[in-house]
Image (tube, rainbow over all chains, first blue to last red; front, side):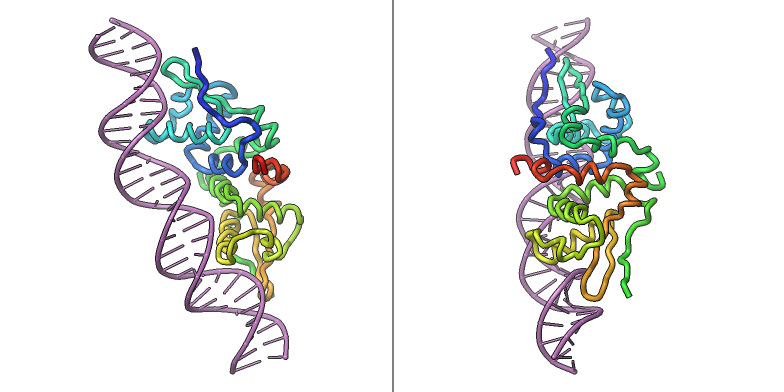
Amino acid sequence: MPRQLPQPSRDSINLVTLLGALADPVRLTLMREMYARGGPADCAEVAGGVEVTPPTVSHHYRVLREAGLTTTTVEGRRRVVTIRHDDLEARFPGLLAAILTPKLAEWVPSG
Amino acid sequence: MPRQLPQPSRDSINLVTLLGALADPVRLTLMREMYARGGPADCAEVAGGVEVTPPTVSHHYRVLREAGLTTTTVEGRRRVVTIRHDDLEARFPGLLAAILTPKLAEWVPSG
DNA sequence: GCAATACTTTGACATCCATCGAACCTATCC
DNA sequence: GGATAGGTTCGATGGATGTCAAAGTATTGC
């Protein structure tokens, strides 16, 4: 049975917390990867290109989830993560697209 | 003569830095106030409703400026601040509106 | 049951960050 | 020049944050 990890309700998503969650290169990379995949994705696959240790990856997924950005479900010994498109669009229309759509070359100057 | 305080060029505005600058209640309040006024505004007036000491306000204005969000000019013994609408729209279309448009009641749950 | 897999939690550590008081700087005005 | 006003910088401080190694928790498979 897939269990769902605790997450804030739509109405309790805080903008400052949300921005703080996105204001980190690792988490922004994770979000971009999820966004590009467009649907439920394997946590390990999404984090494939990220160069931090498993505990740190776990920490970042937790921050994203607790900020209301993602939903994580446990399926066996893997985790599946999804961006909360509907909730985020309802609360902050256009925000996600504005942050995640720009090309990589644009959010990292000289990158 | 109005002097302009140093700020990053349009192309060197970093998304992570920008989000970090906005991920603070005081700075978000300042940005909202400026956004609502729609043009150049007196720093002291904008910060009128904020309940922190002058050194802290000064610190926050600096963070906003160095993140590329605002332009500050010195006119006599007051400062005038402006949101860099054009540069921000060019780099991250729709971002500013998505973050600053929501009503107050929405970015602070139960507020 | 046992071993291996996948991820999390705990604890520690270094760094960053918001905040303030005190001192400083630069205009304005008498 | 002296006094005042508006802001900034400096130094200190308490708290948050990113990171990792080690230990813990589930789940799969033999």
